[in-house]
Amino acid sequence: MKNKFEFFGIKTPERRKLQHPILQREALPDKMRAFELIRQLWDEPQREFQYLAMELLYKYRNQFEKPDIDLTQHLLIHKSWWDTVDFLAANIVGSYLRKFPEEREDLVNKWLNSDNIWLQRTCLLFQLKYKDELDTRKLEEIIHRLHGTKEFFINKVIGGIWREYSKPNPGWVVEYVNINPLHSLSKRESLKVMNRK
Image (tube, rainbow, N blue to C red):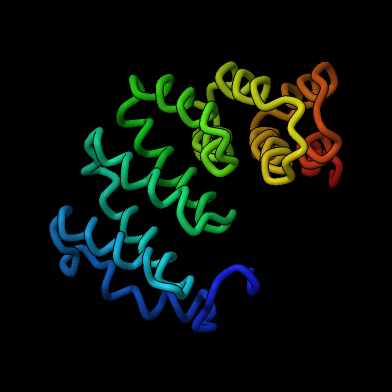
């Protein structure tokens, strides 16, 4: 990432210590002001500002309204790289679609059809923290629609989500991997936890 973005060079533990007072409940601005601040932080050149913006947005996940997905989509497609996209997918989009499950079909279809690899990666990752509640049928459908891509960032994360799901359901993942054609990278990532045992 050093060649992709500017950095202050603040290591993660130090950055978290510095931003801790800003993210305390009593210090948080109202949602409208916070969303303006998030956009301003996203426009800054140094990557640490984007990390702060994401964690600030996470503080408002219980206040999400349906139109708030527009801000998240803006963040997903600007200054995109796995470090921000993966956090937004699992923590922000995942929370949003838990709150508004009726939005899932339209949103996933829109993002899969966008030809934007970061929106497509988000479709794969938004259930990352759902654990036993993960909708395997939906995930299979998304993977099937992306089948045949040579995009590294898609194939790696297909394996990554199955790797996470293999922790509570190893047998299911082994069966899925054995009967479905997957890119070699996806297959390798899917079985990584079980191959360590």
